[in-house]
Image (tube, rainbow over the protein chains, first blue to last red):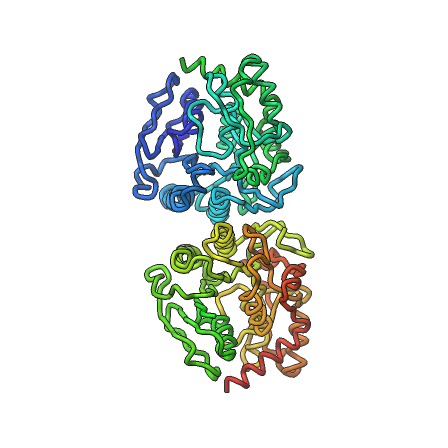
Length: 319
Length: 319
């Protein structure tokens, strides 16, 4: 397949690109606001073309007639979109919308995978078995921006202009590198920072607080599955899918940190209540029914310890 | 109150303006893409200022610092938005979004009433007791455009940029004048055209098919109620409200036509199945639970015969 990947310099953009470039049967266009690197150590680096582009100012530079798919991973993360209203709407809505119009015009019917988020949910949200049939009442601009783009994907797909799916990502942990600007960034930091001998602040003192997460490896697997979904995997006007995750508590994460890193690592975790984040953290759904995604061939993690082991392995590979 | 009304040249714009200009305690700015008329026979015509404006090209010309409220009634109707994709998004989304940005900047916290529609619902939709807690899965671009604007209203309100409510209108019948470009236009035509000695085509042969409707008079009453909603009438991030309607079948409408207009009027109604419209007509929800709106002081029609009598009265007044 010939595949465009936006936000390709980001963490998920890089790991999706790596999987596709190791396969060898794909040609990639990697784009971002900075020129994205070709992931190190891939088997077929020559199959990637990198383009620095602003999707609003020059959307046509990254869209070609022969595209089979576009994986839209660009975006301003949750707390950044909350802090800068105009920037959030510009990158998360206007850039996506502009690109969709270009895809519809240049390569109509193209497979589009849109990275949505479980931030589309807000109170009231069922505490158990959240499905695609539950209403989305986001309590952050980020979630609203995702709902707007999901609605565009639905409409453009119903009209045959694209063939899209909106994949609602769980929180991805453990992510390597610098903390993202997501409110959920501490959910990677709680492992990553102690393993580096650095402090991580967990913004709530509630070890029973739990969150719906996926490992990077499982996320990439599931994105590759979605690239090959049959066109009629979902009705043409309802193209949203909650990607599989599994529930992990703060205690589970601390246990995994101790198991993989040793007891001394726990000293690097500082738990403190941050009142300004509390209502947001407790507004998130933490238990999903992923049967639709599983029925379409996606898979689920089963252990956070494995996620931590995967992370350590990634670090080893990068050396 | 000082109130901006967009789409003021349209039928609903005119009847809302009339009610407010008969009251005398309001100053209105009436705007539309053509210069909107001041409704005939109002008590205080001098309280209205009319401005011809394109909301995208010149949004600032209609927004003043001292606005207390904006009633957003502009729009391209359902079948027109389906026929012309770009026009529908331009008028129904981009113009609304541009105006919201201007309102938020010039008169932050202003009361905004956004005319949404029950077209936000699509299959699967519960056949009974549809509420604001049911998911919106529109099957028309018009409905998608409404969902997008509702999402903006929610977000701008949560952030305190405006104080908005999205009012999901039922189908309004009986509307005078030329048929609108809504797919539901025949639901006024079935009375209006026979009363004028003209034919009306009902695009389905199913007298038990029913629809959720409101009379113009009740709609105006309810919009005026919403102008005065307390700020906390709904949670700041969920500002949608299904406006009251009541279920009317094709048979009910024919009975009302006969009762008010006489048996001979029935000959002007031609019922024929239009396959291209059938799935849309059957995808619409037809039974709502309006308890939320009623709890906030809105009211409901109880008889379609009364709607027809209101219509005849409106015609008499206009003479």
